[in-house]
Length: 248
Image 1 (cartoon, rainbow, N blue to C red):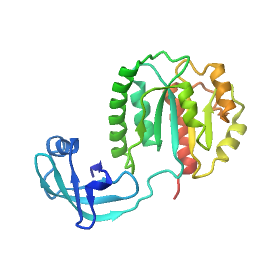
Image 2 (cartoon, one colour):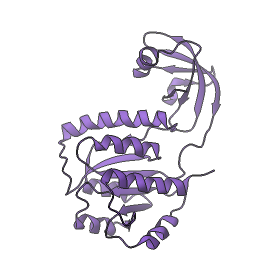
Image 3 (spheres, helix red, strand yellow):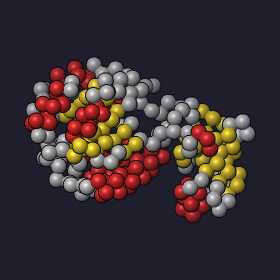
Image 4 (cartoon, rainbow, N blue to C red):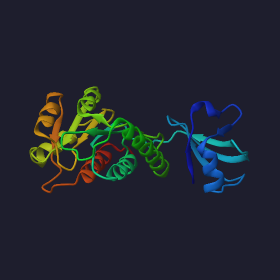
């Protein structure tokens, strides 16, 4: 069943109605070609989702009737920020899509010393618009209760400023200690703790970046004896954390 996100002010629970406007109108009418009487899910992006039925389709608005409301437990108990070193080409799009599916709360592209991709402020903002669209599509597909935010690319220093406010900072690094130490670190993460994951670009982290992260309390971990691509490393760690943190 199709899923859409709306702000709280578009939901009238007293009269059991929801209004959809903007791009959702075109998507429902002209892409999905849905008709009155068809049903869909609407999420308020915070807590509730609404099983709804299309009552009326007008040029600028679609009116829904709320059939029932529920409070599902789709989100992870911990909020996870993915700080991704900017990769080459369109890899960022794949990374964002999969990170959203795996439960990331926010994705932050980061300019690091060994990044090949160079984006000025204007191009970065344009890319961020596209990335946010990908995040929304992935959130709908994976039944997320919210659309994770994807920021414009930030500097490494800005990323660290964001990360220091989190409870844990985890950094996959090829020179980290063995699997026993990694298991101990990951097993010590408690549900409800906020987590930042830093992933290096294709060229990996510069040693100075690792030292700066450690000075902020970051813990380095290994993902095994094999060297993973930048687009694989974050997904691997997110998968492990999802498995450990997921509730029944």
